[in-house]
Image (cartoon, rainbow, N blue to C red; front, side, top):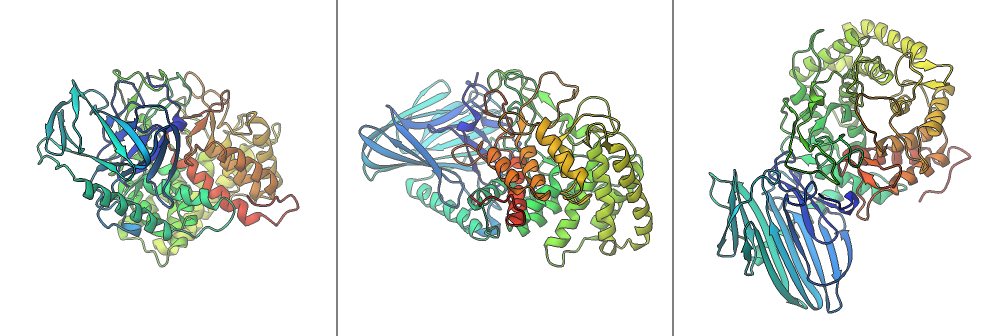
Length: 613
């Protein structure tokens, strides 16, 4: 059973796949060649599911950071006899720069240890376990390294040292003196393809330097945001880029599957897919981070993946695979014990079958943002037809119940957020009507938009609670109501908005000031932690209501739960304060960027403003 804290992991990315590395040099998670591929190392979810560690044989003081402007990890081990610097990276394509990074990533994990003073002996342990630990491959020494075969994979480990194999584990001990370095590389391929060739030391070193420059060139092109928390915003932009599948532009919700919302619980989902619900907030964050090309690529992916004929009896699917796949059927992996015994471990996500009416608003808002943020963006005929269908479907189906933004697995209900986003769908469709060639539909859309508005103000507002609530006729609060001023339904100075924001700040926060999504039953056993996205939403909404000092405090409470290399999980355990949930979570970093922009834009406009950090 894996027990290591989630916050101990750092992310490596090549804009196609992801690896997670512990603070003491163990790769415990790696999926090649895509984010949603079966893991080669999965010790994150089970001690016997594979890892690759490089660390000193004796005790060491450890410090780590990302190389400036990159997602290349640098870990420093200080021992009584010397100091080693370990650099880890997923290789970008050769000489890829700027917006082009990830276009031809080779699927290679690079590791290089350099002794900078004294003498240090390193222990290397290599235990690949393809297909989430089901395969214990056969290993064969070759010139320059080791080949491992099993299942559908062949793995090539480049290492200029003698390896001792014991079953499906290989080990080496290497002593380095000041100025000497050890380079390693892991390639993967299909068994029916030519076996990957081992790389020599010079090539490994050169490709690490090239990958560093690739990330730095991307970062230099994305420096639009100026203001408080500038470093965190820039870093979050890199995290979003790392979670992007470059061939299609899809952005995964997280790099992992089945890290739980409650330790030992069953709320363990696969987040290595793309949700339509994230679309508008993602584009807003990408625009703030000066990622115009990434905006266009992400919307293009959504338009292609979601494109289908919509009529009054069909639903828009809520999520897709990174290649645009629709069938994401869920299945358990019973051979894995799960992080801290949180089982079942799942691959796939059956939420793809749900009806969520909010997706029409998120899709059309994304289309509107793209039109606003990029110069002369034009929709092709298929996309225009699809967006028209989405607007018409929202107009015809807004009165129906659904599962809501949080994918509640209980009975369908009339969720306020779903109605709100149907209003957004028509509001943005009206604004886009000339571009969509739909000016003849505007009067009808305006009439239905007005009906939705009346319903929300009448049935969504609960006078007894003094707030907009989770669902029509329900007194329960829900953090999704914080989006009311964000989408422009009501201004931040509207008394009902301010009352709702204050009610959520009072009744849905824990002792740390972090926000729960809701406290009502959702059809699942157990509970969950506080949501970092919702906490950033609270900071964002407080800023929109003019309460910038409170917004600043809430923002600081949320960002304080980033780990030592600036990564945010999905949730925080309300009892222990420990990060939980899939990691790193795109939505949390999106919330950080958008809240930082909202606070910056309103600081100095109210008397309760505090100085920026």
